[in-house]
Length: 180
Image (cartoon, rainbow, N blue to C red; front, side, top):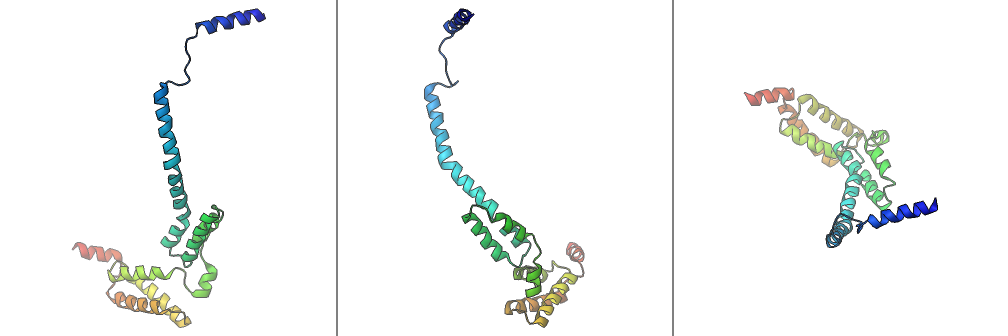
């Protein structure tokens, strides 16, 4: 039995010609390996670092678009998360999407002061309905009654008061007037 395996194996081996490990010729294989190593060493690490950075600033971007009152602290937590290898990132993500109840109780603001800047600009352009402008103005009046109105917000309240008189009743009314 052993001799049959040896004889059969020897016959198959004698039929085999030169074996190649690749379908490419050796010179082309070396050139391809050089290019792959350049790509892996020089292009992949910066790309991965960039993707890592973009993922880590997602909570910061979410806090900015949602006008979170603590967006600066969320930004700092995102930067710290980069230093600690992403361990703090889930906390920043959750913080960006939570409603800050204690901060609202302490400061009276549910969103960042920058949102008043954006809304005042929209109100001056006539892109906010009168009811929304009045609600923002009333919110700033409540802050003043509590003694928490900063000078910057005082200026924004005055801008909103001027824009409130010129604001349309609805935004649809303004677009209908613009079309006529």
